[in-house]
Length: 322
Image 1 (tube, rainbow, N blue to C red):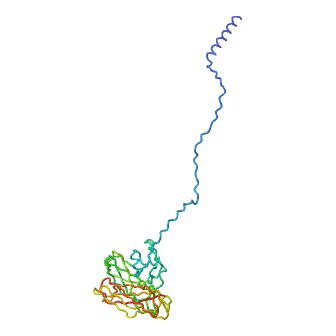
Image 2 (cartoon, rainbow, N blue to C red; image 1 turned 180 degrees about the vertical axis):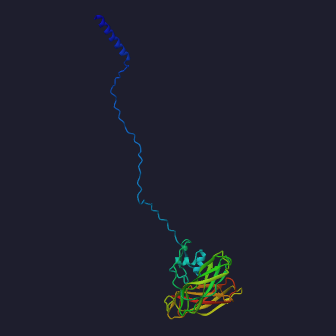
Image 3 (tube, one colour; image 1 turned 120 degrees about the vertical axis):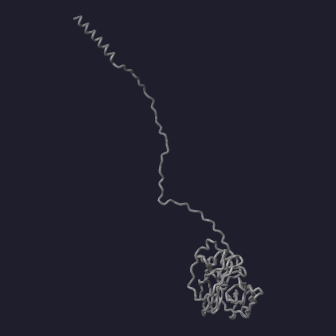
């Protein structure tokens, strides 16, 4: 028994050694309390979207400075047509900018507004249906500046006077499809019954004498008998003297009032020059610088010039306003 016990004990010792050799080696780690770390978040820009309003506001533009309008003071011998040509605008544009000014009876010292070329493009409202008057033959000739003057006589066959007579003159050259037009006006506002006056229009350069021309009435308004805006007048002993070259003539006469106890503050005389063929070759108006009373005559003498052919005769009409 003793031997068996010893053998058993030896096996136990050998087994323990064997098991110890087979057991995996382990290391003990002692964990000490860790320090508490506080995490601070890093601030980054977060993308956001700004909503667009349904009706975004638009900036209000600052008002543009208004330019000072250009004006012209009427001098003796001026006409609407001559002023329009001087400032290179149409006659209709000048009339549209000065609706309260009578183009055919302006007083010396009248201040006219000269429209800009952009404003001159604005359409002018149409005039009422014109009274029936008769237009004659259009006559055109070149001016020294390269422009073109055109004249057309107008006859008032009515039993009453007419006023504010104007027409459009159209011209065209052979072989050209371009038709030019200008408004023609009268040197006086009033055309008495059974009387003839001439309208004139200027075509700025470059313009050449046309192969074809025509005229159409734009406006002619009736004047009531005894209209207080006009005083009845006549010209006593009208005469004309053609100069030696035939291209100018002097119109001479005396304006009288055909009504008692009246006084005219404004008096005009128009002279129309005709050539031997009966074409209008020149128109000129004259305005008195003094008033005219009943019983006293107003003498006048001024020159009218031809644009081409020699002058054969000169006809005159007068107009007076209170």
